[in-house]
Every structure is written in C-alpha cells, then in structure tokens.
Length: 181
Image 1 (cartoon, helix red, strand yellow):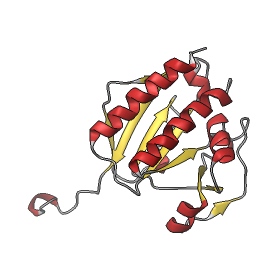
Image 2 (tube, helix red, strand yellow):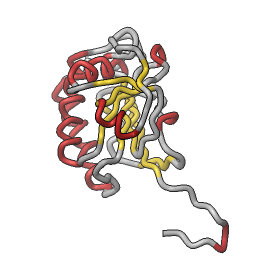
Image 3 (cartoon, one colour):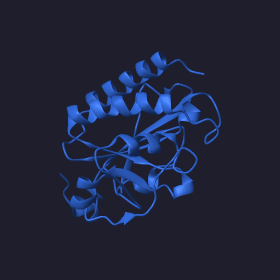
Image 4 (tube, rainbow, N blue to C red):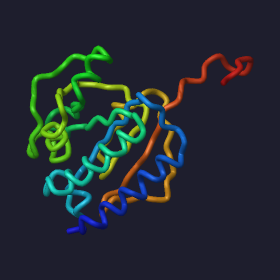
C-alpha cells in the first residue's frame, strides 16, 4: 500500500499545478472521479480505502476554500456515476436529486466519504462541470461540459493511480469569418 504521506505529497503537487494553470474561476464546478483502490495499487473497485478518501477530501476541501470552486464527487458505476454535491449547489443549478446514498460497495469509498462529511449532501444524476480530475481512470467525461480540453500536468499519478486533468471551453462556432474571444 502507498504511504499516506506520499499521497499527500502527490496531492500537493497536483493542487500546485491547478493553481499555476490560472484557469480556475470562483463558482466553477470541479468534478472528481477517484478510485482509492487504484491509488493503493489495486484494481479499481476491489480495495477501497476510507483513509485515502479522507486525505483527498481534506486536501480538496482546503483547495475549494482557497479557490472558490465547487468540488463534486462522482460515484462508481453501481450508482450510474451519480454526483455527490452540496444541496446549495444542486438548488442553484436547478438539478434533480436522485434517491440513493453512496457507500463503499455502491458509490465507492471516495463518494461515500464525501457524502458523510459534506454539510448537506445530495446526489444528482448529471452535472456539466467546468473542470475535472480523474484519478484511476474512472471515466468522468460524461460530467464535463463540451468542449473538454486535456491538461498536461507533470504530476501524472496519485499514489499508484493514473491521473487525467481537463478544463472546458466554449464551443467555437461560425467558421472562418467568426471572431473569437
């Protein structure tokens, strides 16, 4: 198993790269897909870890407080990759709540931990996020706005898990005579 301190160090490097990218806007939505099993060096869905989830949640809560982005957490496929978020964001976005509570065996350890530690959590079926981080190849693409743009950070892993980063931009429409901002 990967040491917790190593996970924290990797997360600090990742957060630093997000800060340096200069693309985060206060009020933006940041979706996290995360396999704590993959971080620990195991196959996705086989060895969930509350301890790893706690470290990630705490670090991302501080990141959220510092940047003003809304962190939302993707469940695993057993809950159709539903999203855990604060009720205040759900209401502001006018999203419908779905009736489920994630737990480590259906939702995943990360989503379950987030649900247990948010102020007023709810699950929604879909969101169109502005930013995303996929830890362990959990497939967050369905929750990103069109058009997703990959980010090439130097920190490519968290523990033993592969990490992919993306932000979104508006669609370019109008062809060769259009002017873009």
